[in-house]
Length: 99
Image (cartoon, rainbow, N blue to C red; front, side):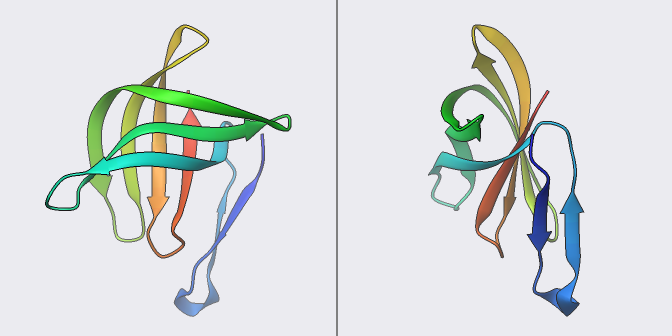
């Protein structure tokens, strides 16, 4: 697992995220006409190997001031796991936490 450091542009603050299971991610989403996103699948890298994870169930999104949190259920090696996908619009980056 990696420590991920997020830098914000506001007052040179640094947000430090040190959560077990937090990965930088590439996410494929679909959007509706209002611009709301729904994740379909995402890719993480672990031990120099890229792993593609398909979202089985999507439970909605929470929009906060600096980030959006997407709650999903995924199948990883035939085991259902909960995942939170974090999108930081200013950074244009995705992160995920798998439990």
